[in-house]
Image (cartoon, rainbow, N blue to C red; front, top):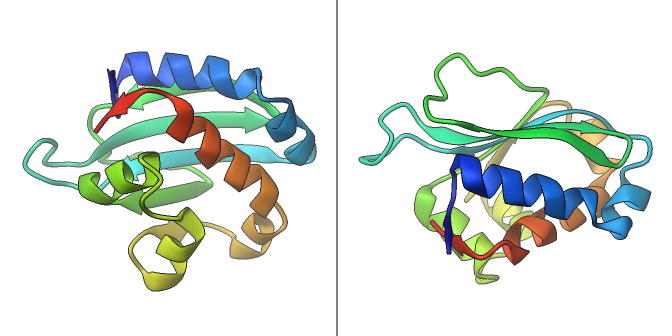
Length: 133
């Protein structure tokens, strides 16, 4: 099992996402950065996460961020460590989590709504990485 978030998890996820043909097709017109953020807690007082540089169906880079202070990205998808674990174990649907306020997204929601299929593939790919949160 790979810890989320970590440099190893980011490396595995980047490779998995770049091998996902369904993501590549769904995200052909997407350009932008997404930060998968675990909110501050006892493990990471300033939050931590994985920063994704996404470009036309490919992940140009995925990198672990140990201190989320000052990180800027076009989109930030944020939740507690416990809720990230629930998403990765398919106990919590990310769309329902957004609608209920369990997760929050910051960024241009009109743009995000045009890429819901790509977002689903991205989350499904993340959930497929053997993860210990």
